[in-house]
Length: 480
Image (cartoon, rainbow, N blue to C red; front, side):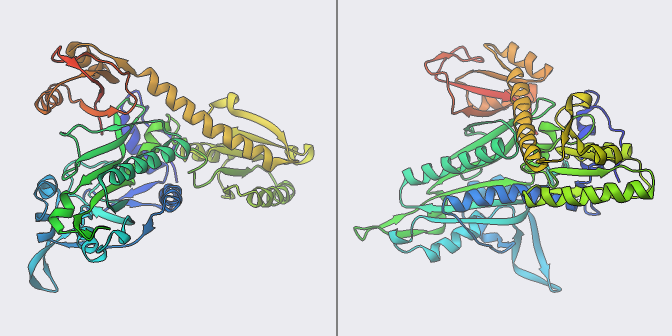
């Protein structure tokens, strides 16, 4: 049951976040360090994310499959850059069934290697391409500093893996899947994201290019919310994945991989939440509306319950996800606060006077107090609620977009960048620096280049660090 007092965001955002995750009933602590128990309410939120993405994957021709959790250690060693990138995070099984294993098994940190081994068997001819596979799975990365949903030792995700005949097809796939992530983030999760390419220093281990969607949280830090990688022929050559082209010549395939994880749950919490708790976009909320019956005695209870039953059936028939809060021994005020904490988009209150008048009270979570309260007729309620949910969805996206845009600032010098990052916010500026320059800035300010946005101003400018001519603008920010 949710206790209502939380640390204000302005006082300690990190503490606010941790409190919200547990008080809103998304998760519980685990006896295993760095792991998380996802509770039903949190898991339903993940299932909405999963459902929204899965529909999009299948619409673009991808099929789901499942590959083993355990990966032979030798597989990872085949792509040197890949294993080097993951080495510190690997969990390795050396003993099983009471005996030492001949070859250690790595607990899946990501599945490029084991899937590429299968692709080698499955791909023989150009007719086998493109091969478009997605996997819903859990992965393990031994994290030193963990935070619920954002960075845990074990987490849930999807990972897409595809093989193509040409570099152009692989690049188109990589960009297409980033567009799928951005579409989900903006239209379902109501989070405005910036699409762009990672610098070579920040790209995925073993990739030729990494593309990302970056989101701004309410503390103005960046969250990398989904990535798509063009792997070129690196893994194809490491695993010998070749096909006969139409001219009967052997060619290496071009591969991609792309993933989005339970980190998106954390993104929704931190992009929309306020000091009263979660504010969930209706498209992903486990319950889009909660009905709170209000009565003082048995006669009132009977009359109210009859109306609740009728309206509940109407709303459910209209495809609206709802919950009726019939908990005994709790005041309506407690229930209102509890559902505000859990971020339910719309609360419906109904008491004896509402039954008499044929009305209900609706409270929308995206607007505080009286501003978000309206009284409507029971007749045609489902259409009114559907329109209200659409409005709440649009409102949350608009609020998040305005907040983001107000906190991205153009800088023309390193001093400006440093000052802005210190104050909190994203710095946008021309860049012609090196990977070493990036590393030095990270060390001095804690900020990294989040991405080279696809949306560029064009022309050239002066690099904010070196003063040299620069052809691209980048975004610097502190990040999770």
